Length: 541
Image 1 (cartoon, rainbow, N blue to C red):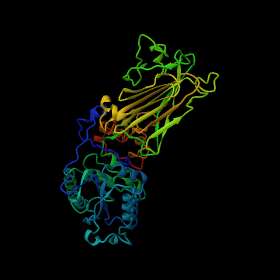
Image 2: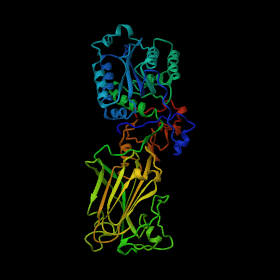
Image 3: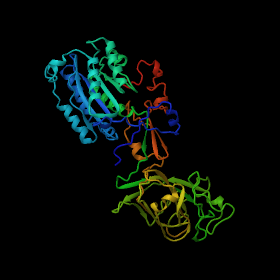
Image 4: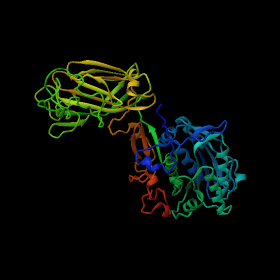
């Protein structure tokens, strides 16, 4: 199923420049899990302030914010796409930490909504902080951030999970007033030394940075740590949502997903290009007959067919110069437009497109030239598929048809003729084509309608084709996925298709520079190393 991406965390800064150039993607091996530990993608501890400054209404707003965030569709989608789910727990703290509420794994929407319901059901304050929780008599009312951090770190290290990414979320509305502030740093540094990132959600209603700066200076730490400021309890929900999305996605500066197909659905839409020609073109409305081996067995480096007779012609064509115009935009010779087709899932689980009157550009571009249809055009599809074994491809139609897999011709129906059929059993030619199970390969399809009086087009396949309805080389699933929107502006990361994978590079300020190369990630004019508020996207802007 494609409800989860195959994330590969990249942590080697020395390799990242190569990755940015599309030369390398490096998966970090998962740390070996201790005996009995369950592997997860993320371990997240929510560490929540219930000190004396947090009154009953503020506590409710804080907990309502967490519950609402875990009911948000984008947050749910983000968690569902983690390969091994998210292990999560919550602890309250004031002067002392309360025991955490226990760890559980969130994989599915049902898991996540159940956790939100559990947050709703946690004990609520009545008229004072003393009724916040069953542990209120033990934790008391002061602000002990260091004690909370120490307990959260211990809980992560001693739980039953082995996470690729370890995070503590500290939310609160005040500065440490129990221990020396240096002890907060000690607690934070101990967490970081154990590969735990500490992020902050300071609640700063006055917008004077009093609390926010305390969190930046003493609390947050570790890889890509950040403080997401909530300017009051009323906007706590939005701040939590933003923070959760960043924690899930921004811990991955750059990661890859497999090329995504659409075959988990009932249809596959693939991009195509149609080019219209006049009937006066030398190769159109010309001779009739089969014309095999018109093109070479190997596709060109530009993924176009190569005319096999550079110094001559064939039965139905007039030489290389004219043929080379078929699948290229040539001013004054042809006109082109995008034309996607949708293959529909059949009872045998194959996907099929059938059109026994395939005239996609009637009365368009160069027009019908006095006929009932526009008969003179070419059509091409470029896609990819992941070879799983057992794939078949069937085509029936007219006129010319060539199909290439991994750059090598597997169907040749060249010529101007009536409806003809061809089939490919991919397993039977896999060795010849150099295919290996689990690898992704190019699929290139070329069609030409060159003569009256009919046009048939029937394509059926069990191939796991890339679904890319706009033809930009990036799968529809990746383009529509909520990879995080730190500032709520519709941010989309940089996506680069490379071979059989799509490389996603985070770009928080959407300036076209990847986070790891950008000296100013919040785009405020201050370099991160001099910025009093690096990486901060808040709702006061």
